[in-house]
Length: 308
Image 1 (cartoon, one colour):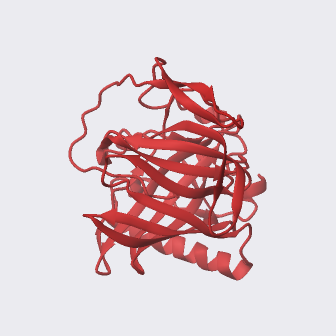
Image 2 (cartoon, helix red, strand yellow; image 1 turned 120 degrees about the horizontal axis):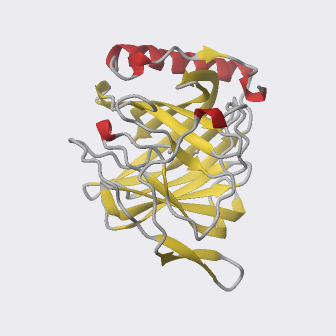
């Protein structure tokens, strides 16, 4: 919680996308001594993007999935490093769930504000949009990222569900299980966003600077940009993402992050500042991304949205 995914330690490739349907490998379950479950390979087909039904969303801003909770005022700080061109770079990610919502393709989404720092300097600021369906699955509806160099914005590869062939994807299933196919975390050919997630392990234990966690879920993420590399995201019930790691041979995914701070509810003043910062970023988005973000309606301040 950047992939801000809702953090953004995922890779992004550039160029012209070629859309094709791929058949990937799913996994079967193997239980190791101690009850830890891991994945093995099988031959289940996977869809390139998910079937989306706007009618399957009702209380969409009440995101209470235990593995991916998003309630207004929640705040996470992850610290670690990335390896870039053989050099280790300090990395800090701050994620706050705002009390803003945004209507996208008829579904009201929660607005999450993320700031990504490298070596103490702001490297990227982002707005990300999530909603939970009736079954409890959390969906990603898009994001607006601004990338900076020497304090100047250099690019903003936005994608929004329903625009430029982009499709919403799944960030967390209602009931994650081993022996299930991978799932699209969003499909955006305009910016080559092809990220996929797959339940990799369950019942794990991990320790980070904040504290140790039991019964941890690990999701492996990959993309067509780096098919031989995986980013590993560790989730704890009631908190969300507590660790980010990687495996494979890709370069962009060599990132390690650990949860150092978690606030289930920041104060009213801090939440108001986060809201103002998110709205400032949105104002920039309307000027920079006129063909994508410019086609959306403005975010709204709905303090009661989490209980709607």
